[in-house]
Amino acid sequence: MSTRRRVSTRISAISESATLAVDAKAKAMKAAGRPIIGFGAGEPDFPTPDYIVEAAVAAAREPRFHKYTPAGGLPELKQAIAAKTRRDSGYEADASRVLVTNGGKQAVYEAFATLLDPGDEVLVVAPYWTTYPEAIKLAGGVQVDVVTDETTGYLAGVEQLEAARTDRTKVLLFVSPSNPTGAVYSREQTVEIGRWAAEHGLWVVTDEIYEHLTYGGAEFTSIATAVPELGDQVVILNGVAKTYAMTGWRVGWLIGPPDVVKAATNLQSHATSNVSNVSQMAALAAVSGDLSAVARMREAFDRRRQTMVRMLNEIPGVLCPEPKGAFYAYPAVKELIGKELRGRRPGSSAELAELILEEAEVAVVPGEAFGTPGYFRLSYALGDDDLVEGVSRLAKLLAEAH
Image 1: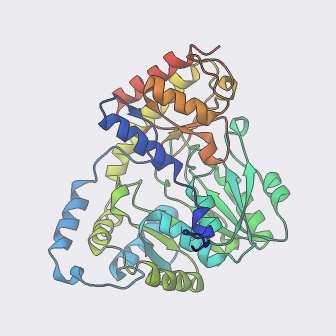
Image 2: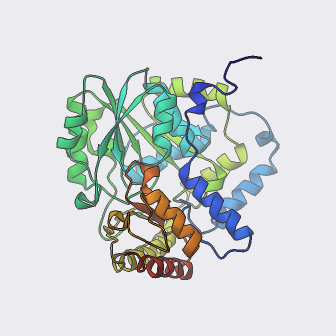
């Protein structure tokens, strides 16, 4: 009998997406009849705007979209993405520097796969989105965490980044607004970090998918635009998922220098070929249209954000900085770890989250998933009534901790 591994070591090392796992468990419990309220999923609770859906319907009836199209994306969509980027962030890039991908996750992976050789280090500010470590690992890179906490609003400074830099550092991953914390770097902070990266010859991979979701006077600043000194050592990641409530349509993109885009396009040509043409035409309608739909969503998110933060901070043992962007709150629950609750004494935020799901029928994602145990991530991309009910259940249960 063969002693060879059935699944490769490389793929066996990949962790399941914790956010999707929590969401799946919550949905399974709900399907079984339990009144679960889920704060786990990172997707807007709004439908995709009608004009975008209609563009997809029209595309589905068009025979030319029933065939293969260029692996790097429909030319008209690449042009529209370049124009949208110029409009929204002031960054100048022509269509040849755009690669259309199957969602933002493929853009993340292809960026790291294209830039990294085995052993190259990537500076990653923690808390971080769960997919970054797996993409870096698959590309042969080494993740170096720069850990932040609630005392700084989850923002990293140049001093911290410099302390983590070595002669093997090749890439800085810059994310603002942040998933999972909602942190947003000011223009001044962004410029300082970008100039530091340029000074040391680092690549910057900047994930801008939450660019339109900022609140309370916070403003999105593209590091690619704010720091022209980065030149051709910056790669922008983005997509339609969050801005246009299109998570299921699976359209993202990567913008970078010609050699990187060409190499990433070659990779994609063998991995998936073109993105679904119907989805690409829906994305074309989205990025070519105005931002009125996202303005309405942002207003609702802002209202829910304020409600959630206020309610969380009223719970003894919970401390929640005010998120300035995206649609997540990231409260610290370290004071509750080890306390007795319903006859149990959870020893980690993961165990506490499991207890909360079972006892309060509320799903949250523990900080272990984002590289910082002792925290929860809660999405406020759900209905107002469910949000209040869910946090109220949380408060009632956690008040019993002693």
